[in-house]
Length: 399
Image 1 (cartoon, one colour):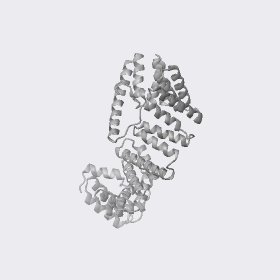
Image 2 (cartoon, one colour):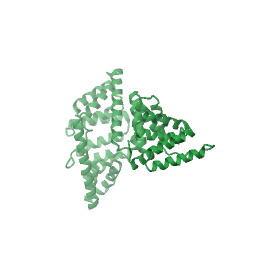
Image 3 (cartoon, helix red, strand yellow):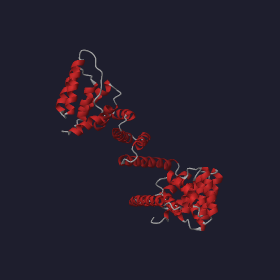
Image 4 (spheres, helix red, strand yellow):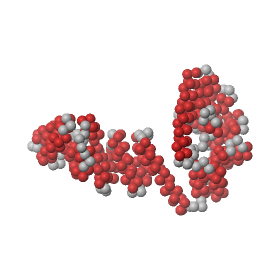
């Protein structure tokens, strides 16, 4: 296979094959001559001459790491993994700190089914600083971990890759698949070990919520509470499900409020619980009650987006746009993809005669709304429902 000059240069930049190795002894001068010739051949994309010169180096110094490394890179990109493994292994044995040649060695070993692949890929992944090669090695390594059923190492590897490149589709695909498999694996264990437990009922309820079946989810939450009313978060989750299922129904509001009060007794002060109580007060048109609950939520956790947004929304309804603006700007900062926050902030700016800022926020609102609709469409293709949005958000214009 003939690589173009630019492609061939990229190969060596990526692989980091050109190494500076100090030489000593009587063979040094002859080695240096062949190395210089090989480097010149690489620059002119004359692979055959480069190969011959590197072979000449090895005839003088069979353990020369630079020559083995460069030959291994050439063989790797020609698809000759068997030869590449031999040369790259010699290079790594001579100089174990060579992360990039070790990375290519691990990839080739994996293709050949060599059990050393995992060890070499893991060692390279820990030291690599080149983002593209580290991503490639990480994905190869995660696949090996997955094949051996080592989900713990799969998860840690994918977490490192997401941190490295959070917008890479391959990384995101593999990560969601990893977490899905991990979730299924733990669910299977729970179903075997404790099929009649409160946690099993809670898990079923959460799955039903994710599938949009709130009615049956509520039944399973109630069963879970019957089995163990002391589980932290269970009252809160039931309250959320009841309110989502029928937020305009006064009986549902009352039941949800009762569960939230039970949660406060069991768990103590909690910002999320106060936000839900504020939501119920809003549904009842009790603005002062809503404000008090959202303010308490904010005081408990000033970074809670729902508390910030609830305060901003309530203050806007109370015709206090200047006060609302402060909290809505916090909400946009803490959750830049919250379309309601942008919409409410746009209204506040409009009321404050800040036309340019209002237009910017409304444009962001429309862009985020469009993106969320695309996400909803994809969920529908999977016969799933995205996480339910509060009525205040769902009823925004154009949503």
